[in-house]
Image 1 (cartoon, rainbow, N blue to C red):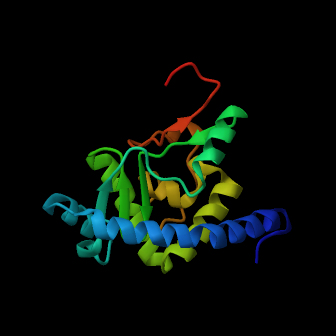
Image 2 (image 1 turned 180 degrees about the vertical axis):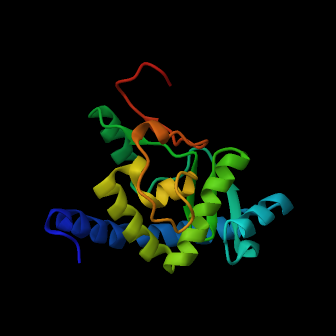
Length: 181
């Protein structure tokens, strides 16, 4: 049961999960159909990270990675000055979108594959992931920190301080206020 201060986040996470799960399932099917299987080193890494079915994992290289909202919403958010998340990788079940080939990126996304398996699929993963992002913030969300290698697998260790949160994989966030691209 969520605490009273987390109840709005739980309701929002549940609503977002209901809204996004069909899109995520569709994208997973696309990746499984069009993506490539893991290479031998990636397969070994997946097994090391606890992925139960590394043979089922596929990677589809795309840039940009599709968003679960229509493109006009992304443009509107940018025009309004809101930061827009532009991921270099995204995992949906056993499917991984990646903008480029990088073992650090693939390792990060394979952590998420293991989490999907451990939590029971797309909807349970999204529900927990979104709730953690809403209550802890993206960078401090335990599932994200685990995928970045900042806390042990299935770990419950205390969260590191902000200065310790600089893992090898850092997602891109487009901030319209910045002067860099």
